[in-house]
Amino acid sequence: FLPTVAASTNWRSLSPFIRSSEPTAIDVAGNAPTNAFNLGTNLTGNATYRDSVGGADLNDYYQFTLGTGSNVNLALNGLTANLELQLLDSTGAILQSSTLGGTTAESIIRTLTAGSYYVRVFPEIGSISPYNLNISVNNLPVLVSSGPLTVTEGLTATLNSSVLQVTDNDNTSAQLVYTLGSSLPNRGRLLLDGVTLTTGSTFTQADLSGDRLRYQHDG
Image 1 (cartoon, rainbow, N blue to C red):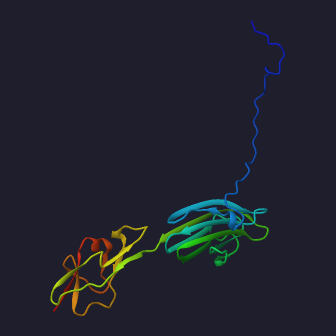
Image 2 (cartoon, rainbow, N blue to C red):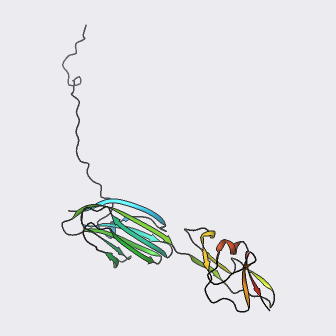
Image 3 (cartoon, rainbow, N blue to C red):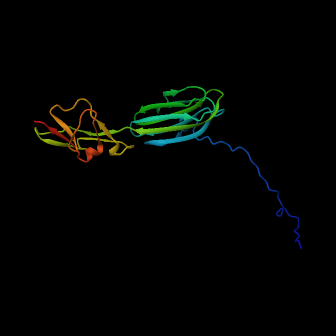
């Protein structure tokens, strides 16, 4: 026994319906500095951004802000056509460009002071290409203290972080390494845990903070 249902637009059998099409690409980066994609402030570390540019989309702009002096490395790769790379200052003036041509990866390496900057990715006329934009930021050490050390003739004094200290957002105190140059004291010697240091010897900020570095005056 099969039930019957009166004809109604609310009761209709529909065949399975499947539709497939290429999704519309989302343009993450803005087309001008005024609507650039903001990568963040006090930037540090590494990140990769993937997008495409070309055709009606003539520019991709990214903005970032550094809270301290930093080494910045920009790499543009994954290209299927010729794209170019530029680094701009906060006014939009070009600081550096990479225009190697073809599908060759582009790169810019530069030491920058604190402030705001833009990255511009753009195609050669007629080119359309996806890309990977990698940004690596390594903040530079900041000098906190560098004071004189007073030593009584013939005695020993401790060099600690109150005399010499640097900080770095990217590194621990054990990773901040000092290397002795050729201008060593001529009336004494530096000792690290009791061992005399010479030209080329190293010590760390952790050594200074731990009171392990001493200066011994030879009288």
